[in-house]
Image (cartoon, rainbow, N blue to C red; front, side, top):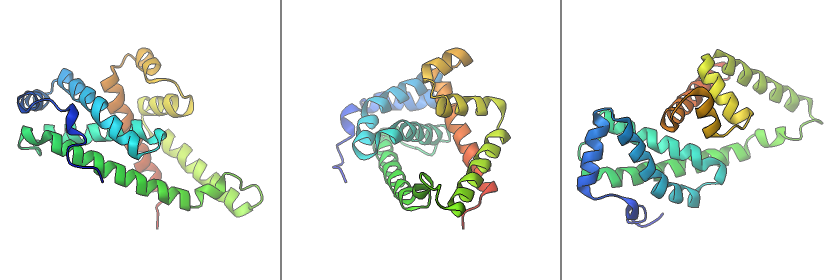
Length: 193
């Protein structure tokens, strides 16, 4: 893939990372926002080079959540290793997203777009729509509202944050958790073989 220094041009010095890690461990929302800004400057560029534009925002949020969780749970022992940890998480995320996108492109979902001539594919599509609808209804009202407004109504993050009185950081976390719950409920209703 890329050389080891590709993502390090945006990293603060080791002292800055040590302070940032300690503040995140102490549950500072400002420190989490600072980490997100660091990721937004450096990791977004990396992700944009390796993923399609539709996947970049979600991948960035996923990287952020993995890194914050590792810091909070004290999995990351040495703050000086934060830059390398972020690089590893970002690389793994691009690999997983790329593999998953290839699976989707090869799967029956591609045929579903123009499946009017095939009753079996129409039935499968309708079943998946029903499962997605049920999974969405199984969510809490707040999770359902965030996902519906962002993905179905295509409202901007800023508009949703203003209407729901959320910070961008809260929105990111809530959206990510809601997506995970939605996926979990969908898998329960439509297990893969």
